[in-house]
Each structure stands twice: as C-alpha cells, then as structure tokens.
Length: 218
Image 1 (cartoon, rainbow, N blue to C red):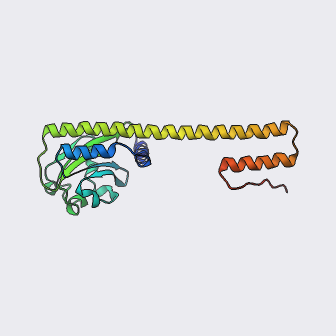
Image 2 (cartoon, rainbow, N blue to C red):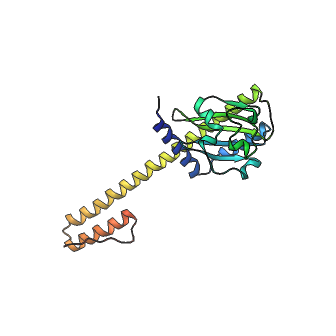
Image 3 (cartoon, one colour):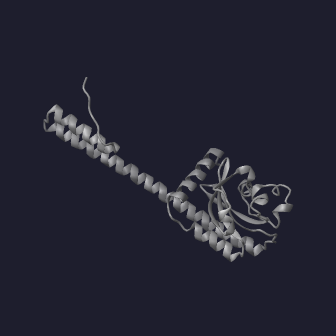
C-alpha cells in the first residue's frame, strides 16, 4: 500500500500538472454545479498541510483563498475515507460545523467524491450550497461519475508533464553529446589548444544557457 511520502509526491505532481496548462477541469467543475443545481462547485487537492483549490465555480469563487489549512477542510474527510461524503447541513455536523468553510464562507450543504491518481486519493470533487439540502442517490452517483472523469483528466495532465520532462532531458542529452562531438572533432583535427579551449568555453556557455564562459589556465 502506498505510503504518505508517495501520496505527498502524487498530490504535488497533480497540482503542478494542473497549474502548468489549460485543461478541461474547469469545465467539469462548472458542469457539476450546473447539472446538480448547486450554488458552487470546486476541485481540491489535499496536501499534507493545506487544501488547495484547483478549480472553483460559482459565487464562492471570489471568497475562497487559494488554500486552507487541512484542519479547516471538509474535503480531508473524503481523502481520509476514500468514499463520497454527503452532508445535508454542515452547521449541524459535530465535526464540521466550526470549520472556516462553514463559519466564514457560509457553506451549508456539501457533496464530495474522491479524486484519485497513482493509487492514492488526491483530493475531492465537490458541489455545495449556502442552504441545507438533502442529496439523492442519483445525485451522488452523478457526482461520483464526474469525479472519475476528473481523475482521468488529472492523470492525463500528469502523464503529459512527465512526457515533456523526459523529452526535455533527451534534448539536453542530445545537445551535450553534440557539443562533446564537436570538441572531440576539433581535437582530432589537430586544432591548437587555444582554439580547442575557446570551443570548450563556447559549447559550455551554450549548454548552460549562460551569457559567456571561460577556461582559465593557472
């Protein structure tokens, strides 16, 4: 079973991938809020110490900070249980009624489903309203299905970012090999030490993206 360090890394990778490019996550959040006739919807990733709001739709979006402490998070219960959480009235829930999302932001009814990736629960895909509401089984099933779509989108984003990372490493390796080949060719052709060292400095500056480089002999 994956440990906490694995989960921390998975959440960090998902957050970085979601922040790196345009994606369909916002559309899924808006669709969930519309289809379920909720006041707002949001996708959160729950790190070790904070809950990060990746996408938010509805009037709550202007009031939400980018993150909240995990201790103030409703979504952490979804992450801890790995199961959907349906709360008709958060203000009556003994464990949740004093959270900032309830006291400060006015969140009353809440429905959240787990978002997963890399064999761990990363966060929650949620909808809610500023008034009490009883969630039906059909609504819970719909939210869970949309959460699976969000999970797939996040996995795709992470895979694309990893592919870009590998491609960048391959380009760097190819550039290094080409630079070494040019230096080796200059040596094989019997170039003067001054010319070879000048070429070494030039290639080094290019590889490191520096404005200049020098080889110093003492």
